[in-house]
Image (cartoon, rainbow, N blue to C red):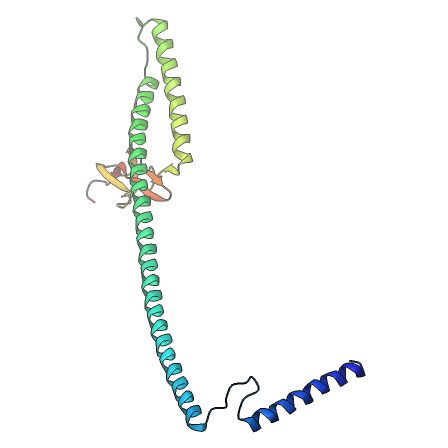
Length: 219
């Protein structure tokens, strides 16, 4: 700042001080308003203090109300989230039940295809059976085998896989013993025949296997 500006500011400050002294001598403030006496000043301060207290109480009430509304809103959001989670879980379970029912229907269809394929494969023509009939039964067995493979691939893509049972120890959690065998050359409790194949769905039991369990006579 140059000297001229400093002199100008100093001159304005001196003029302000001279005006303030004159105002005090005349009993007025620098803006022309009369200077209040001490009683009036104390009354105004007390009124201002009461007003500040009132505003503080109003602010406190508003904050308390806001906290209550915030707590209610947070509780509502929590309940809404819980309801949404329950709804999603119910939808998921309903979807899984419907999918398992569909998969069980597909397994029933597979059982019929497999039974038809095995019956056609066991067919042995007699002397009087025409060659055309033999070719027809052979082509039908091939078609069933192809459909069976496609169905197995479809089930595998959906997480369904066969349950190992034949030649395994009997497991009451995943198998149902339909009959008993009496083979002394086989261990007790060994599955010797699989009457109906069991299946797993995503490593959980979808359908138990129906098996024949070995139990030699006398055990």
